[in-house]
Amino acid sequence: MSNKTANRFSPDVRERAVRMVLDHERDHPSRWAAVVSVAETIGCVPQTLHECVRM
Picture 1 (cartoon, rainbow, N blue to C red):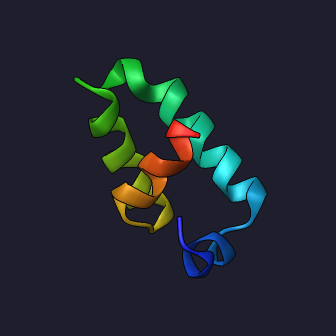
Picture 2 (picture 1 turned 60 degrees about the horizontal axis):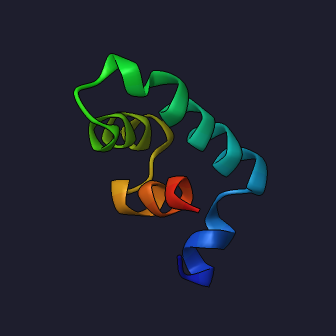
Picture 3 (picture 1 turned 45 degrees about the horizontal axis):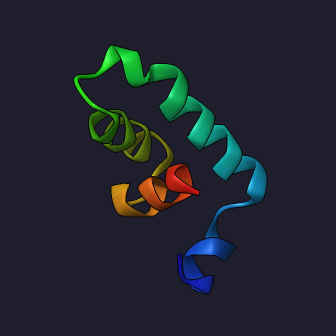
């Protein structure tokens, strides 16, 4: 994740988004689908959120 992306969202927002993906993963056909859904909700690109989830 670039510094520009890292600075855009606070650590609290990133932690919450990761929790949302993990909590709602079972409601989607795949983890990626959950990432896309949450990314749309918080206003980031799915790739950025996916990197956070993978950490």
